[in-house]
Amino acid sequence: MGTIIQRDFTGEAMGLLVFIGLGLHDEDDITVKGLEQARECDILFTEFYTSHMREGVKEELEKKIGKEIIVLSREDVEAGDIILLEAKERTVGFLVPGDAMSATTHVDLRIRAEKDGIRTRIIHGVSIVTVATGLLGLQSYKFGRTTTLPFRQKGYFPTSPYDVIKRNKDIGLHTLVLLDLKESGETMSVREAIDYLMRLETTKKEGVVTKESVVCALGDVGSDNPEVVCDRMEKLAAKKFESQIFCLVLPAELHFMEKEALQVLAGAPEDM
Amino acid sequence: MGTIIQRDFTGEAMGLLVFIGLGLHDEDDITVKGLEQARECDILFTEFYTSHMREGVKEELEKKIGKEIIVLSREDVEAGDIILLEAKERTVGFLVPGDAMSATTHVDLRIRAEKDGIRTRIIHGVSIVTVATGLLGLQSYKFGRTTTLPFRQKGYFPTSPYDVIKRNKDIGLHTLVLLDLKESGETMSVREAIDYLMRLETTKKEGVVTKESVVCALGDVGSDNPEVVCDRMEKLAAKKFESQIFCLVLPAELHFMEKEALQVLAGAPEDM
Image: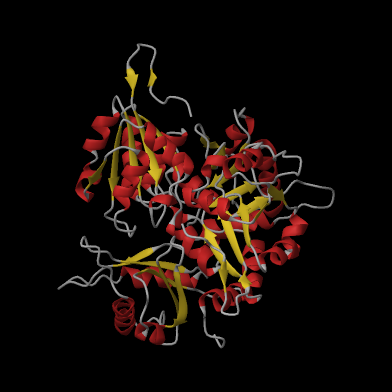
């Protein structure tokens, strides 16, 4: 790869903002290209507020890249100024867990940079959608909109996840359901998630989920040993998992090959 | 990474089949983990029949990995025996362009391996769906089923791509349209693709595409300098592209932020 600092015809340095996807689990889930590009950046930022990456991944990346990485808060990323100001004249790398561009905030940041005359580049990473579909043997085009189950707080009990699952299911699409993450790193448990969904069913009564519904749970995705389980909701709620579960998949109607995949790859019930 | 040859309790060697995604453009689009895993495999296979990767990528990968890579034909992969036989007792790496598991054939191969008692592992790669959405600033959950436009041959003029685009559009989903690839590496041109779609419209008359429809074209994705263009169909058909275009995106109804993204990132018309 050549040098990436460019100058315009007046001799002024032109800024560059590179979004680099980190993939899902550890410091080795970045692409070779992403790693090389990170080494060429003048300054590196990252955010981990949406991430389930392994603990210590920042320190390991700093060792591999040979540069310090500055962790930004959600507020910093949403405001964007810290990144955009640096990218005016220098080459800034923004290391993003998962794929580089799946969050609306990041797309917005890229649009603002381009409007400011800052060149942008994307070095893509592996996305949770790709990984969840791949591990379960489902087809990616059969996934609808993704939703997140938030922690329940006093007076905060959104019903939108239920509506998303219903709309997807009505048109034959599976739903990837991300489980909320606290800043402490604590994730919602599968039991809590299923309680949440069943409570929504009790309220809305639209027949989206029952105790008998088949659900998939995924943990440690991207690691050498991901946990991939598919069972009826009632059984899954009672199960003890070996890893921290990141997401559920609620399948819509299954193609026969998808059914076989869930049985062979995720231990789905034979009689489903 | 530890050694990956395992033995069961009888002391017999257990086979392992690792699907390793290569990403989209060149030898550096593999993840660091994928590269390390490939180095540990006893034998490496690949297929390039669905791929637009840069020429010479196999040779560059062989240099990086330090091992020979055997290229399989579509028939070999579909039959699967060559891979499964080797994976009975050895560690086999199957290098797959793009993500590792997006083709049904590959999911099928994995299911057969597991049923045969061969352990499988996936090291995911970047998928075209992630990249196309990311480059255009669109939301991945707003993509419906992907379709491919095949080369027209005497008596072969499938209308299914039109039906897929219509079904997606009806429910507000964008369509990724892959352009067919000959074994010689030749891709269908954008003009041919648009002619194909307009001809289907003339036949079916369901108002899915018009000369005024906004379409995106993507070339050299995954490279340092991807070509990303969005314009009305008529204009796009007349355009001279700098690179080989791999795919089109036919957007459904756009969120205002998606509209701005297409204007800033892909030069979409201001009045769309």
